Image 1 (cartoon, one colour):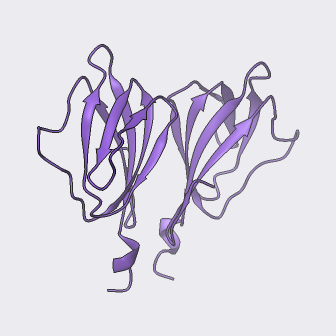
Image 2 (tube, chains in turn green, red):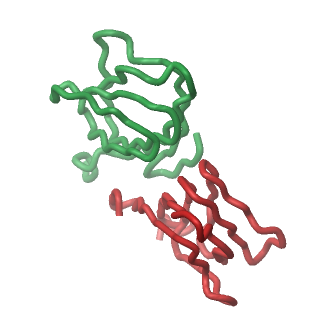
Length: 94
Length: 94
């Protein structure tokens, strides 16, 4: 955890070759914005056929409840992510 | 501007050798969190004697109304910053 306020949290995540277990998907209540700082990764969204290959400097918005998985991270070097989590806008007024 | 919600905004800023004009300070109403993605920079805070030399991957929290200036950015290459601005916690309940 790098930074936390009532309205968001910012995390630094390090992967070295990890991927989401086969057949599993992340389904998050919060919006997420991720930036790849070092390494490399491949993300897959359930509703899209093509995967996203991410290189350092690439970023991506993952809407709440948009099912996704990490297909691959570079096994040869640490993949460092910056992830910003914040509430789903659709829930803001509830 | 990369991303904006009611509670924060995330910006990508590119400097190539720019610095804060001599004798001027930034004094911001909002909290800021900055990450240096590429290049290099030197930041100075009014209340500290030593400057911060920032390299790729370095990040820094700049509290609201903490007067600071950018002394130097690398003139030989673009310095890319990621800046997250969010409300001053002290003002949250007003």
